[in-house]
Length: 308
Picture 1 (cartoon, rainbow, N blue to C red):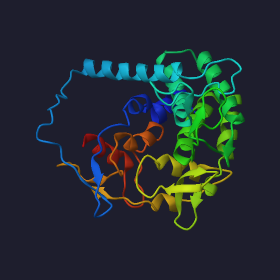
Picture 2 (cartoon, rainbow, N blue to C red; picture 1 turned 90 degrees about the vertical axis):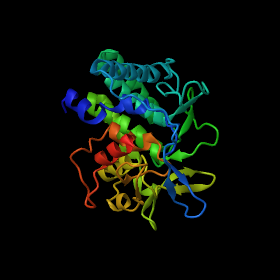
Picture 3 (cartoon, one colour; picture 1 turned 120 degrees about the horizontal axis):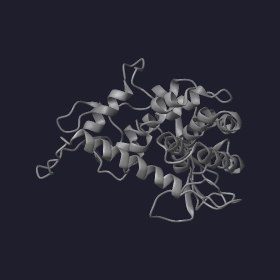
């Protein structure tokens, strides 16, 4: 695949979208009566934000966001030669220096490609970081190909009593497949070795036809992806698996609750309305020209949610 085309179609929006904090105020709250989120309107005293910025200012803001986001993933990775956790990226900064997140690592792999494209690093620097990171991932403990969410950044071993996470593994896989497609060759082989190991049906509740959220060896499976959130990528990864595929049924099994925020247009909202839930899958997948059999355009849905 042409590298510039790959970057523009699949991962161009990544650094801007992942720079948005997940700690944003929710647009919906859970009521004690219905168990469903209800509308929340902006307060009358909310400040009015001027969005009419000059084009040059907007361009610079985006550039600053991109570079700052890239710097986090590049600088907060374990780069100790010979370390069992080489390439693993810290969960956050500030935070525990010893804890890496498998999702951060997936975002990081993708960020390196954008760094190459933007000239922040050379292709050789990106190649070396990616190649060694994939070696780390291949050697790490997994459950049916799924990774633990939080791991020790030096050893790559499970941290605390962390869960095996379906969504965080999915984010990692998006990064793994991105570098595999971009570099090809040895990196491509390693990337697909990692992806092909993931046993998607194992994480599926056959009765409800929904993916579980988590698994702990001590407790078993926990939670279900029964409501719309950031998990769209999971259905695509599972459907595209050559070794352990899952059909389209889980994609149509989760609740698609339509509501408005304030006076905005109605859209399918996530449980708490956090902005990242509408953006993460779009960091890699271009939904603009796709409408599913129920008439849903996830691109348009995320536009409405973001504008709200």
